[in-house]
Length: 371
Image (cartoon, rainbow, N blue to C red; front, side, top):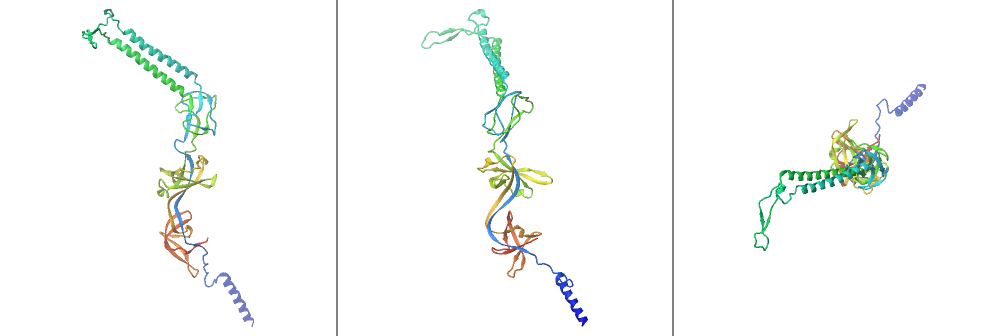
């Protein structure tokens, strides 16, 4: 009787161990994988490329304004943040010496002009044989309605020296005129104007400072036209082949995360930008949004570039697709409740979604394996 009771106790213990340990004597059982189910639906999707970038002024929209002559800054009319119009005066350099040079050049021009008159008067021969210039043969000029032989006039002869002196006087006048023009141009450099309309972004000098113009012009102010901005988006080399000029783009900036700005691809730089062994290409996005005035240079952007749009196509989450070599599979839920592996063909991708070309139908339930 004791042996029977002992045998029952041992059998009970082994049974509990078998159920608790998954029948160690017969091998462990595999757990059924857990799935999150989704339904295959039709929707409109757009193939897109994601990139990061920054707001930059277009070429010519940011100008550093400098001085072309040396001198003391007499007046500075610009402060950071001021709006300026094209040709508005923003600074003046001391110019009394330049004004004196203009006055001197004007006087020299008047003297040269008078010199021409003196040359002509000095060398015009008197109407007598004593001048030494001689006369041509007598010329007759018939008079209208006159039957006489005409008017008798003796024509003087100039020698070469006379003509050279007059030409020399005229050349001196031209040189004086050129000197005056140059003096006026130098004087104009003392008044510094805005080459474009925009906003003063920086000021690099102050009133009373002396600037020295050399090979590079000293910068007074930097002006930016905030209405002429673009996006420089950095697209990965794996995606750059799908980017084309004219494609639609949307982007956001950190300061307005809930607002989307619109644009389009304007240019693709041919030379790559390599940073930390990552190859990107600069794609220029032209901004065509009415709210461009909200943007500022160097703002960070998140950009979406759209390649194409497809309406009413079958779509599933990209996470449901299992890749094996060049083939793609999903797990389809059967009526029995089990999941069957099935091959599919996919199309364009848009964010977390992917298009299904074949292998599924609308309403099918597929499973996404949980980690």
